[in-house]
Image 1 (tube, rainbow over the protein chains, first blue to last red):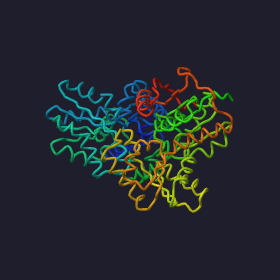
Image 2 (image 1 turned 90 degrees about the vertical axis):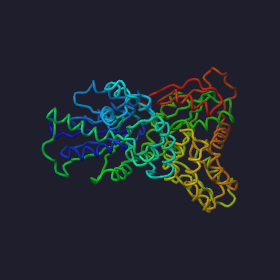
Image 3 (image 1 turned 30 degrees about the vertical axis):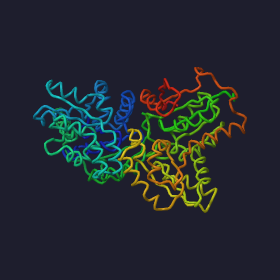
Image 4 (image 1 turned 90 degrees about the horizontal axis):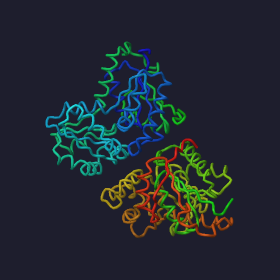
Length: 272
Length: 272
């Protein structure tokens, strides 16, 4: 495998761009091929079987782009599909859940960790499983927040309605005395301020995106797979693919990432 | 074609069951095969090309069930896909938009009609087009309400948050002086009370589901396709298919329809 090959990153839609942003910052030499499944978004209310089938199709597509490693930048896909898919792969695959669980364990002082995410991620109890593998005494309290994604996609990032919904979703977590809260969905960093305000200064918010990029960097270093030279702009450093509505994706992407995204190619993902 | 063949009804998910409910009431002799595309819901934020491709797959599936007519019980699919698909079909296809537009014209006194729906339905301007075909002087004001579907799916049918969001979406329509408002998404009849309260008693709410069932009945009568005898229960009178999460579908369906829905069969719709 060529070290100058790109990293494949995928998500159900645009949320995974918060992970791309971190990879761009932390390992700027790497090329990236991103796929956002905008035709079938959201994944968070779908079944394990469907999310796994979709993830497999996406990985087949990313492999046609000769990627050297894959990041599942979607908590739902990481939660439902990764264990199975990792075993089938001949290149490294990294999810966002294990890195997120690890930072949460580093951050907590009282051993009480909250996790917010989609219905799928919370029902899978995967954060709890990973956290308890490392610390059997840790207490993990999960809470699904299904309206957060549509509120973010509607742009209500700082809004009394988002505050009110956050109060309802999070009040049980406040009462439980957690000191650390994992933002277990790639959309949630975009309402970090609201969540932080509701939870109060005593609770550390964990964004798995940062730690995922760090894990990716560490893995590439360990495997001697880092790209040594920075690709020139215009040499396909970053490429974006979606399954629907490329124009809308480009607008949203440019609000998240500073690198100017000029195009996103539409593909029929069900053909992979 | 056998008159005892079923009617095929489809929607992006569960919303179309509000149309099924009307068909069950108005033409109880008819068998129904319902398909809800729960793996790819929602359609309202997707492109015309994708919604048309998905609708074609669904129709191919419904035809394997030997349906005698098809109802697109989804405003987005009716808006984006129906004109094209109607021309390719050898059995009648009915959407919800034309019937909705017709009732709105019957209901209005001042000729000012509001339409609320998904981004896709509103951007397509299809209600405006149909209404103006019948009355060039009518004024049609559309407003996309993208948060209504997730609010309904979260069960916030009577809730201050839904009131607040409704106030924001609808205040422009109130100011415009409309006297009739089309509920241009099959989820919206479920928050009819909230919308009615916000709009006030002077505005007539139009639910296209009722008129769609009436149009279906009229068409079957005219074409001598009505089923003359009521099928026994247990003879597959109503059958439900979904592309994901059948259990969740059954729970939601039973909250909308009185007929006890015991099973929904999972199919891989992308194979059609």
